[in-house]
Length: 615
Image 1 (cartoon, rainbow, N blue to C red):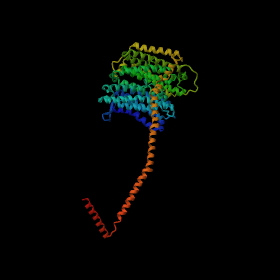
Image 2: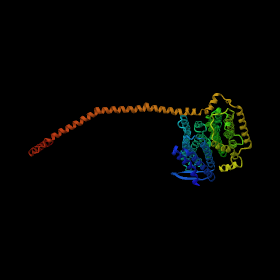
Image 3: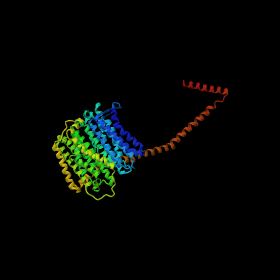
Image 4: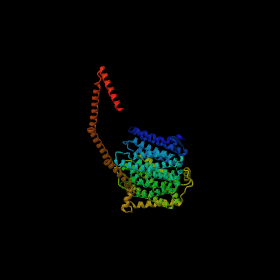
């Protein structure tokens, strides 16, 4: 049992590291090795999901490495490995043979392994380890084409933004230790921290989760992450990195509830992100940017579910979103390779030229739109039922965000299906790249029954969250009807601009100006401070050091010219006097006895005179 979990986590990590070390020498076999490892990991994940193994190994005094698979992490490990396998199947067929394939597939395996470590971590330190490796490998993957400064800048932006939010995990760990309870470093024990440390733990967890999942106000980093290869976007933004924060919030639901305020903050943060980033997605004219904004919005539903305690709904949303969004990103990447563009006006008719790809894309987009009978429609209603029970306003916000999902999904479909002229310069899409897309499209349909009894009750029992809110028939009908209506209106609206003021449209297209705000509020002040420190260093410290050196040299020269000469003269005079006294002292030393006798008589005479005078 324990070996199963160790192998599940270490296999992709170890093989990924070996591929990176091997470098270009392993390019030819990298794809096959990565696929074999991921397929093996998927089998191990399925076995772990059924057996629920747990392992522990000594690490630091009183702080062992603990991994465990329960209901929630069991669902996640299967989802992560399944989506990774589909993405790598696509990459093996689509990724150029002249690329550094060993580096790419090695990083993808490292990334997947770190995500597996994150979702199976039973303690906060182990989660931090996986969290950090995941962030580092995501930076390397986004900046995979590192010779392009724009791509490396985008990778830096994503890395620095998420790293800033990740400081929350260190705050949470420090507060948990300060609480003084031995059990508070386990994820299940965080809720037992004492006040005021409980609030610090909660705040740290929320900040790190919102940053990693690109929720407001951190959402803009996901826009920059689109500079990476499309398979990277498909993996990072569907079932791994950006859902890691939502998973952490679902995992630490008792902590949010115990804090007394964390659940409300999380719920409204998720609802606000689903609404605002839905509007951002509607305003986009770049397909990958539209999908990126929709990822923020869809993960907002998962965060909302964590805030209202709808763990089953959030988990179902996570699984369904992973299948749909990975398919959409991969399809966008295939069109980018075949047509050389990802701009929606230039993708007119692309689904007609690649029918199978177009149909698979359509299934995923309709699922994203929330149209029945596809999986995201049903999953969203399960979590919205929890929102309705918690706060009707949260339900209304979630329903409005679901309406926006239909709008931006229908917008994408309108462009790719609109008739257009022939594309003689279009490249052929390899058949091997289409196969995983078809499988993911089937998953978008096959996952729907999980949101209905009796499978929904089974999901609740597996997750150990029985008795959660269940949607009524009218809720399913309402959300499906609104999604259908919004899709029809969007299709009829066509390419006409949004009925908004030009400045508002520009703001939505520019991701709510969040990056500009971050630069104005954080980056610019820090850079000004850095420039002031550099100026102080140059103008004050450097000049002070240079002045001190100049004064020291002058003192040294004066010492050499004046003091040194005086000392030399004194020493020379002392030596001369000593020689003179020595010469005088040698004169009485004649070696004649009568002279020594005379000298003695003279000395005693002088002594006698002195004694007489003293008396």
